[in-house]
Image (spheres, each protein chain N blue to C red):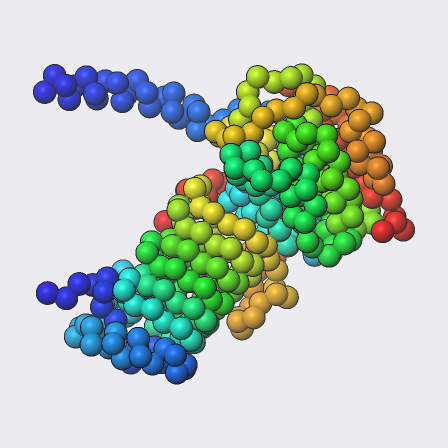
Amino acid sequence: MWKRDEAVRQPAVPIHDAAAAAPAAAAAQATRPDPIKSQTGRDVVNIGKSVVIKGELNGSEDLTIEGHVEGKIELRDHVLTIGPNGKIKAELFAKSVVVLGEVIGNVSATEKVDIRENGSVEGDITSPRVAIAEGAHFRGSVDMANKGKTVAGPRPADVKPQASLPQPQPVVPHAQKVG
Amino acid sequence: MLWDSRNKARNEAAAPAAALADAGQIFPTKALRKFLTSLTSRESPVLMDLGPVVGSNVTFFGERLGCKIILEDLFADLDRHSRASEIAFAEFLKGRLTHEPGSVDGILCWNFFDFLEPPAAQVLAAALTKLLRPEGAVLGFFTTVGATDTRFSKYVILDEDSLKQRPYSSGGKRQMALQNRDIIRMFDGLKVSESFLLKTNIREFLFRKPAGTL
């Protein structure tokens, strides 16, 4: 009865902008009674493709966006997924960001940014790990160093830059790295 | 049934060819290692890549070398420009790279200059020279022959000594092969640090900006 893509579970994602209040109220009517569980068993909130939000989105659970968002999205300890229909003009801050749709704006993640095939990002990325798939579009800069981080969290030791020239070893193709 | 089996046989025959095309051509490089050495001698180096985005290259430069990478796909710009151009590409290039002068430690041009007409090549070379920090390096590939293959290529770094060249369709048009003296003259303000002529008819040029120049 309820379409998953168009459902929005609102309470866990407070919207701090007056402009966002109207669409948020409308979207609240589409609230799904049961929380959607991700593969990891955590709650996942969906913003459907008919939803337009202008303002600031904060949350403490994983979020998938299929709609349009302008402003700022912040999920400090969670995964933000921009679905294939998602169109974002915003600054993104999250633990991990997966892009299958379009993003215009800077992206910061404490763990990983993953731009999948047909995903598009125009902006600067700051994250210790970045994966860009074949067929993805990206324009901007990538900073995997610690200093540029805007979201708290230590940088994993295994991605520490090496002072000397690294030993030759084949670079693993991205397709094999993305699960 | 017969139709299905024919299709299946055709697909099976096509699969190795597709895999081969996807694999691309692997060729050795001598200048890349020198270029990487110049980058790793810097603290928090900034790299500019003028080629199409290649995920594994980003990983290589970002995770293994600790570079900040600026991706400026000029091949895509040239492709768009060649399909629907209103102004000369040289004019377009004048306002294209707006980064701070002297802010980049290394620039990867790949073989982009092979596709540029002389005025555009001159404008780009001047812009790159300006962007480069003192002692920064520019790596470029230049063909020695007028190649018939007009396609652009993605260069995938396999290791410090080898690259995989993966052509892809584009609206680009190869220009005449440049003479060495023309290439050197084009990068006026930089010095040729290394140049290699490979068996693949590719000349590799590594330019450096002299210390103390802006």
